[in-house]
Image (cartoon, rainbow, N blue to C red):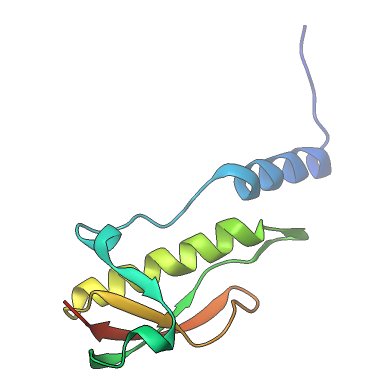
Length: 108
């Protein structure tokens, strides 16, 4: 039996599968030890800089899961922190349309 999908249906199915379970950002070594805290926890830390993370919040007409987007934004920020010697992040606001800004600190 041959199953034939119409082109729009196949595109929708692929977009849905890609947006529902895939994570496209891999942590680099050391990224998992970078912690996300509030600004109240960094008073004795050395500020190192900022980073802006950006990922796709939509694939075509499909919105990606807020949790997936936020997780990927955090992973990108953790990767950036590792690259400049940081170990702590403070978000400068909530994710918006697949973008979020973080301050990077050295606390340990």
